[in-house]
Image (cartoon, rainbow, N blue to C red; front, top):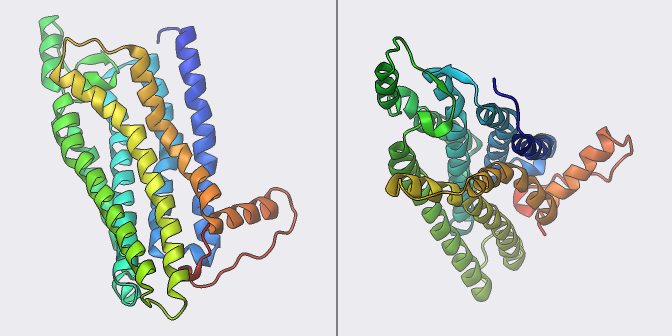
Amino acid sequence: MPPVSAFQAAYISIEVLIALVSVPGNVLVIWAVRVNQALRDATFCFIASLAVADVAVGALVIPLAILINIGPQTYFHTCLMVACPVLILTQSSILALLAIAVDRYLRVKIPLRYKTVVTPRRAAVAIAGCWILSLVVGLTPMFGWNNLGAVQRAWAANGSAGEPVIKCEFEKVISMEYMVYFNFFVWVLPPLLLMALVYLEVFYLIRRQLSKKVSASSGDPHKYYGKELKIAKSLALILLLFALSWLPLHILNCITLFCPSCHKPSLLTYIAIFLTHGNSAMNPIVYAFRIQKFRVTFLKIWNDHFRCQPAPPVDEGPPEERPDD
């Protein structure tokens, strides 16, 4: 394995810092959903699934990215296995965000029938379905849509036999046609656009209900829809951060495919990679600052388990009554 340069050392340091923020922060999110009964509705279960993917980014994808950056010599399929986890976890995050958007839409579209339509069992099935679909999409390169043919031809041209041994790099094993036509144009861009439309409709429905003062629950409709508006804004912010973090890298992939002769500064590529990995550390910060139930539960966990200091009891009323900021 080649020696680590100063630039690589800086890259590794930033990646490690992102992981050290992402893993504990998202573990805290999962912990909060586990201990607070008020965080057990479908939305927060989907948020917990999103946090699981973000923990895996910090604990698995970032170490593998560091390994690839160092550039070990590996068999082609070994390198392919190293490259696929990020595809699986990205897809899982997108589908979790889509499930959250649909869930918020149903809460404001059919508030009286919401609990009969979105049951815990159906939410669990949806989460399992998201992960299964993510595995299929993310492992597609393992089923043959990869660069093995081109690598084998180069390997044979050098007079070598057997499975090719290569310097493990993402673009060397993952097909750009797969990344752009299948991953981006089918499984990333359309869901992002659909989620944007769903949130626009959610905000429209909430504003209309608030202006008409339509009773939608046994409580005060202004209170109900006011809370829905606040949490919808927070979750739309999560979606916006995800899009801003991932679109630059996908745009660079499009440039690689459609303009092979175009020069891509390596610094831009590193910044785009940092954004994608850093996104996994952003969500817990948003929850802490914008959703009171998470903030109170985070403080309770901190005081109970790390400061050995009793915290005020967490309100564990019905999820629909949560007082979000």
